[in-house]
Each structure stands twice: as structure tokens, then as C-alpha cells.
Length: 404
Ligand SMILES: O=P(O)(O)OC[C@H]1O[C@](O)(CO)[C@@H](O)[C@@H]1O
Ligand SMILES: [Mn+2]
Image (cartoon, rainbow, N blue to C red; front, side, top):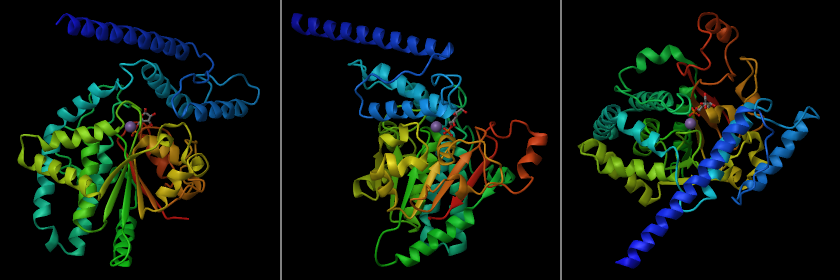
């Protein structure tokens, strides 16, 4: 008894010490950020530290003698990613809290606050599954378009955007789709449909049609992605879905492996028939290997995707095996386009800067000021009446680019 008591006390003390160390590293970080200090090399032993430090050298060269890269001077994408990586460093160096996800509470809350919307979506989907075999092509197309839109607007629910404040989905996402159509600035859903239908015909007997979803936020958005993925399999438009998550907590609400598994477990054990049916089916998909979860450190590096082939050739080669890559969310869009201030009318493929391992499509609500592929005058017209259009999350795109 005495021994167990001492052991518990020892663990407790270790925990308190680790917490203190982490808090002190986090306040150091806050101070550096607030006072525009130079960005410093990472000193931890995490596997990506060397790549981050190489990238710091690259940023130094970019600044071309105009001082050290620093919080207010360096590109936003770079320092923002660096901040999340430093948060990770503060924890990862401090067992026993090295696996603690500082954003977990917010993600869990977002999920529970979206309960009604999750129920509405799961119920709709299970009803759809009952007669999916009898749907003709036109009807299948309509359902695909609906679920793509649900997944698109699901991207409104992220927590980094709302500074961690509630951004859950309260009502059924399906009811408002019609009214939201005018807010889809680029709508390439038809192109996705023809790609999938043709891939299915071509691959009828031989190889697999694989769709990859490069995930964004946990919570309601993740459920919309699961439903879309299930639809792709159940409609036989695809044979396999590969999900790509983050290997460390990222941009507050981004999906980690733990969020991914937790969400499926929550659905499974929910006290609602259709929610739990979804959870059970999805767990089954993972067991059968028709759903696959992957993470790769590249997704939490500051690099834009045009450097993937060089920085993470293994990931690039893996993505080349896919028939379609669906990139969710704003941060992925920024990395697709290099986060540059492009003219609105620049073609999407040009902004991708040769990043096209497979046909790809971005499903993104606009939360940052990068947008390409608009019609002449389209951006300027919205700008005139809604100066916040690029950062409000009110507009979205379903933007497609064929493979090279
Ligand atoms: O979850 P998403 O859609 O990638 O949005 C995250 C976005 O929110 C911000 O953190 C703040 O707008 C952006 O930096 C980032 O692009
Ligand atoms: Mn996100």
C-alpha cells in the first residue's frame, strides 16, 4: 500500500514538473512571438527537426540580407506553421505529457455541439443506403453532389479560424445546400463526376479506383468526410479511400489519428441507431482495409505542396497511385497555391506549380486571401460589396485540376 502510494506521488510530481516545463516553454514562445524575435532553429529531437532547420536556412536566404526571419516579417504560412510546431516541441520534450494534445478539449466539444447535425446527416445517409442499388446514374450524381457540398460546408467548422470559439454545425447541413449554391465561386463537381464514372468504367475488372482525402478538421467536418467516403464505396464509384491526417496536433482542430479513431468509436457507441450504424460500418471499412488511415510528417511541415516531390518523395509516389485527391480546407489550399497573392483569374493549374501527382480537387471555404481560377471580374465584383469575402468562410470552392 505504502509502495503504491509513493509510486503514485512520484508520478504526480513528475507530471507537475513536466507541466511547469511545458508552460515555461510556451510562455517563452509567446514572448518571442509578441516581440517579433527572430525565428530560432528547433532544438528538439523530433524526426522532422532537421527539415525545419533546413527550411529556416531557406527563409534566411529569401530575406536576402534584410535581417533574420522573424515573426512579423516572415511569410505568414511559415511562421504560423512554426508556431504549431513549437507548441508540439514544448510538450513532446516533457514526458509524461509528451502525447498530450492541447487542442483535444476543443475538438471534442465541437463534435458534441454538432450532435444534431451529425444525427441528421447519419440518418439521411442510412436512408440513402437502403436503396442506393436502385439509383440510376442521374440520381447517383445528385447524391454525390449533395455530399460533396456537405463536406465543403463542413469546412466552415474549424477552430483556428474562430480562435477556438464554438464553430460547430447546429442544424441539418442538408437543408441549406440549395441556398448556398451561389456562394460556391468555382464549382467543378461535374468534372469530379465524369472522372469518377470514367475511372469506374475503365477499372471495372482490373485495378482499384482509389480516392484519397487529405483531411482537415476533426469534429463535424470529419463526419462529413466519412459520409462522403462511405458514399464513394457504397455507390461503387470507388473501391478504396485513403485518409491523410496530421501526425501532431495542428491548427487547433486538424484531425490526428487519435481524433480519427475516437470519432468512429463515438459514433459506434452513440445512443442513436443511425449514428451507431455509421460508426460500425466505418470501423468495418477500416478492418477490411477499404478505408486506410495514413499520416506523414510532410503535412505538418511549412513547405507548400510544390516541394513535396523533393522533400517527401515517398508521399508523392503514394499519392500518384490515387485516382483522385480531395484536399479539404483552407490551409491545404494555401499550400496548394503556395499561399501567394495571385491574380484571381490565374488558372488553378498554374498556381499548383507542377504539383499534380494525380487529378486533384480542393473543397475549401475561403478564410485567407489566396484565390485563383475565378472568372474575369468575379472577385472584384464580390470585393465591392463584401470586403471580407476572402476571410469570412462564407464562400467556398470545389476546384479541380487534372493530372499533368
Ligand atoms: O481548417 P482550415 O480550413 O484549414 O482553416 C485554417 C485557416 O484558419 C487560419 O488559421 C486563420 O484564418 C488560417 O491560417 C488557416 O488557413
Ligand atoms: Mn484546419
